[in-house]
Amino acid sequence: MLVAAASVKRKEHESAAHGHSCESLDQTVPGSPMFCGNWATMKPHIDSTAFGRISIDGRTYDRDVVVLASGEIVSRWEALPNPAGSHRVTEADARRLVELGAGSLIIGTGQSGVLRLDPEAKAYLDQQGCGLTLARTPEAIALYNQTDGPLTALFHLTC
Image (tube, rainbow, N blue to C red; front, side, top):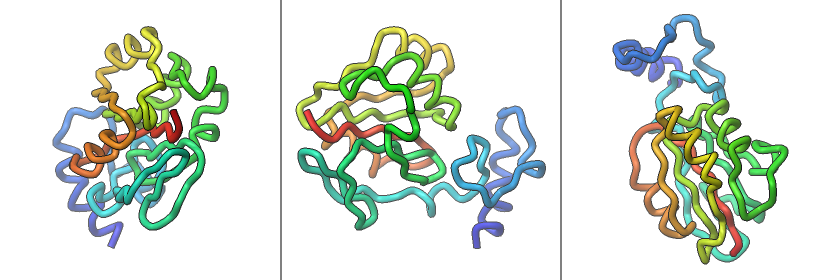
């Protein structure tokens, strides 16, 4: 089904000015920034959150997570191996998120909204044309679940 869905999506994707041909991509490799699969069927559903926890497609995580545009769920500490701390998103973090395929990014800033985006990170994301939404994690989750199309999300689970 993925290959069939990818071939349908390929026609839409090739019509966009995106700088690559889907024919040359391995369309079965989720996590690739250039993945040309069926985004709607791969997007995980976030079930709930509470302080220090998030439930995604029935699985509970107790660490900050990044949900890639491909639908892959990774630990924030795995995706962003050199974070400046749990309450900041730096320019280096922003660069890595863009490398991982973020064209549109939702950042859940924690249950109380403590996580901050460094000004340099915001400037970099703006420069890259990456759409950006910051909201407390419960609101960010609602927005993520309501948004169609590929997007990347980083969810801070505590403060």
